[in-house]
Amino acid sequence: MQFRTLRDINVRGKRVVVREDLNVPMKDGVVGDPTRIVAALETLRFLHEHGARTIVLAHLGRPDGTVVPAMSLRPVAIDLSKRLGIDVAFAGDCIGPIAQTAIAGMSDGDIVLLENVRFHAEEERNDEAFATALASLGDLYINDAFGTAHRAHASTEGIARHLPSAAGFLMEAELKALGALTRAPQTPFVCAIGGAKVKDKIGVFTALLDKVSAFVIGGGMANTFLAAQGVDVGSSLKDADLGPATEIIALAKSKNVPLHLPTDAVVSSAFNADDEAATVALGDVGSRMILDIGPATAAAYADVLRTAKTIVFNGPMGVFEKAPYRNGTQTIGMAIAEATAHGATTVVGGGDAAAAAHELGFAAKMTHVSTGGGATLEFLEGKTLPGVAALERSAATSGAKA
Image (cartoon, rainbow, N blue to C red; front, top):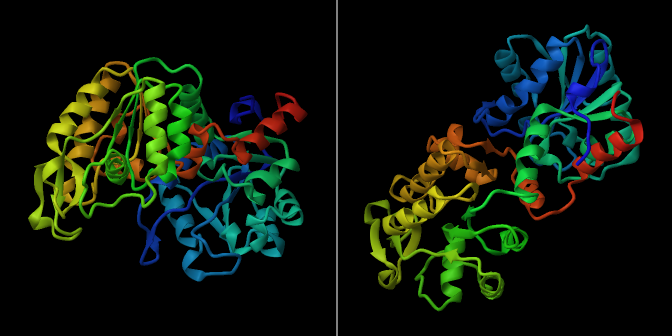
């Protein structure tokens, strides 16, 4: 990948349009989880300190092209102001007179956050006129929103056709960390993969089978793999179609890549019957549901992970949000942390995996925690991300500097 970064451009006195991923959970009108805001601070602070006039584009939720007051970015501007220690202005639209007036009054070092780009239906359609209107607000474009880079939207792809473009520090870090996994990772390379469904991660399995030394599998997808091998998983969550799991098992066998599956499990009669949680061997699940890998499985997975030189953690092993079912994820998380301390490159693959890493306290012990969900998966699958391709195209057509 060849793209420019903030280090390659002079931003002083320039109007710099920055796409950030500020799609954070809101609770009672305030930011609930600031993880994505914190991830954006390095780029925004750099632009402030280097005298840019920073114009931030972002989205919140899925308003489907209409103005939804509960999805306004105004509370995010307040949160950003507190974290940056400066006044981050807010404009009630991302194009037109309101945005233009806010930008006209800026001085070097100022930051303004524009209203939710998805309040305009043209954003998700990557409408050319809308992209042109966004581009007219600035002199340079910085894409720092890896979490939306898999979307060909006006603020992620279209705008880059009109302005000299570069990657922000978060985008750069994501591409560096994930790129290392897809090029020449050190071996043993182990993927700890969980989550609900096999069908959602077929592409990841297929792409990584040519690179990994082994998979350790948990979550609902482990139930699907077990069921595909004839194991009775009771009322556990699993894919209705076992075909994809069967195909992956056969493909892994042909490539001599072990798919480690649970030998014991933590079960209960119902999702909310936490007082009935019990550890059983797989043959004793009965009519109950599996909600976590068992301790013997977790210990075996940890042994595999501790010896790895490269690790991707791409999904929790169980319902980690509930105390009786978090041991599996906690155990493998700490094993990955140990491997990191001994020099392994370890990447947490966004979404639920990142949430688990933060909640259970091992995120800071990883080499990199991705802010992307779908973008991370698509990158690992080897797909072209439109937002990244736009940066590469801009670098190729405009030279190394801007």
